[in-house]
Amino acid sequence: MKIGIISNHHFSLPSINYLLNNNLIAGFAVPEVVNQNNHNIKMIADTFHLPIKILQKQNLVENLNGWLSQIKADVIFVFSFPHKIPEAALSIPKYGFINFHPGILPQYRGPDPLFWQIKNGVTETGITAHKIDKNFDSGPIIHIEKEPINHHDTYGFLENKLAVTLLKSVIKILAIINECDSDTLPFIEQEKNSSLYYGRPKETDLIIDWQKQDTLSIQNLVRACNPKYQGAVTYYKNVPVRFLQASFQQANIFSALPGTVIDTNNCLKISCVDNKVLSVDIIYVSEGCYTGSAFQSLFNINVGDRFGWL
Image (cartoon, rainbow, N blue to C red; front, side, top):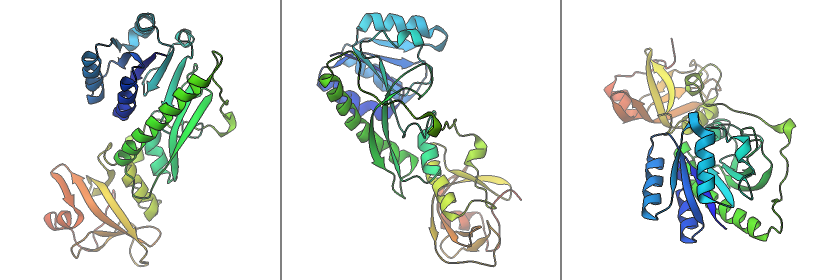
């Protein structure tokens, strides 16, 4: 069996290494995007003398068909790709195109499911391996390899966990293909009634709403924004600041408005709408990254000051 790889994300590297060690890769393709992952893929292709194709959006059909004709793979594994695969190309490989989606389908369709799963406070994610069809993330499911989301997992930490989960999923899919006695892999159609699509987070999705979000919701948003979005956004004296790490305490505060600083004794603690306390551990601003206590000292923040757009 020979496999073509389309990759646009660094979490695919352990799986690519496994496939290379087993002499299963026929060639690589990457989108016309400049990032570290695509640079790494090009270096790997050169090292192993494997063909690599840059897939340009404006010439995607021509580029993709030429690449498929060149590598003659039995199946294409897709590890993140920003463009829709042309429908005519989907049936060219024997087993089609299999996408490895970093989220549970059909509940978390879209280009950045990790952000939304952490922000929404779900406790389980996974890699959903599904056949690609004419729409994004809607094809029939072959296998879901699940992974817990712990209360301390940031976006970046969960990415690294899912790199291992992805490898487990790839090994499982290889076994399914090897056991298949026909050209059609076993699959389960997605339930349309339970499908949800989440777009890329907008800047407004990154902003802490002190009037509506409770302490746990703010902590989840902070984790979802670290490090990819440089932290959850709030404002101090109408200047944007970003919280990279925060924790909450159960102490009840009934007299302070949401967003009010209530303690600056070697810390930075802020009241929330649920009358609990958010302890801000790490803050990012244009001047640099600071601990909560260092930020409080350097910028002369006092008890009674408020965060938020005032």
